[in-house]
Image (cartoon, rainbow, N blue to C red; front, top):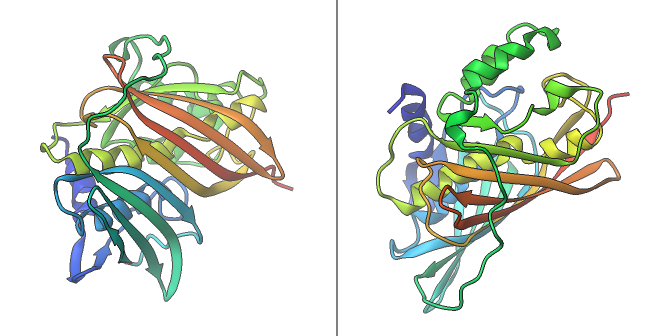
Length: 290
């Protein structure tokens, strides 16, 4: 296991300070605020720690309310909304400096057999044939006027092996493309056999590239090039089938709409053998700087 992955797992190992109150720490991100995927993953950890182990997360719905301060701890308060015979519902509020910065509702379910069907997995090259972030990102160093951007990008993704199928948005600035993006990802190391941990790590990664397809449609490079400004607004995920975050997952993303200073991304996450594991939808602020 890489040291970066160990550090990420430490971030997800929240301190319990009361029965349903947890404290989490943060680390630096590419932009000077707490990475949204980190807050979402930590909130899901907090919710999951108040739920029986035989109940697995099947959905979450979240709102990003304020930018998080990476220099301050985050307090997560869990409300036990419902404990039914099959389903358990939790609500989590993340607070910093006395103000809520994030709100999550999550639902958990005991295993139940039922009807089965799924959308087919799209075609994509094998992940082993694609360049790693360390191989790909330095190719674009000339696009960034701000020093240290490549280093910060590599550091932010050091715990996860994330490989673009095609060039990222900043690789084709000024060239509008089809609003679709694919990446393969897995953690840089093996994980324990804890379903909640794998779901939380997939949640963490899901916020990294989901709005890329919005940028592609307009030939914009993104937050790291400064030709757009933005932030996540809301995030929803449905967990359909078992998966492991330490095995390759295909993140197939597209943007059906952008309007009103907002862009929508939707995606399906498949296991390498073609099982539809997760469905994701996110809307974010996407503005052209004045």
